[in-house]
Image (tube, rainbow, N blue to C red; front, side, top):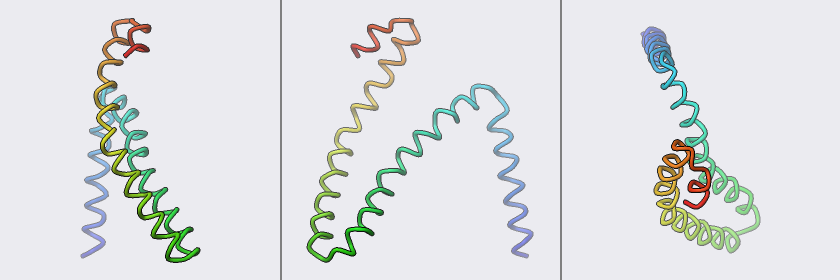
Length: 105
């Protein structure tokens, strides 16, 4: 029974991937989205690795890392709006052929 569900799931995923990659614009979106997803995953993974390594040093260093990690994630969360606000402005200017304006944005 479980094998049937797994094979059915795989077939569904295969169909979804084929449908997703059918049009060139979809492939282009995926080409841009995958690295963005990777960057969203990278920071928590780095913090997890830091915690694993610093955890061997003792309680006090791990507590310090916990505070620093909280501060870092708060700053990143507050400043992410810069990326979300500048990306469309730069894209519009580059699309219009205005490289100087894109750099200034």
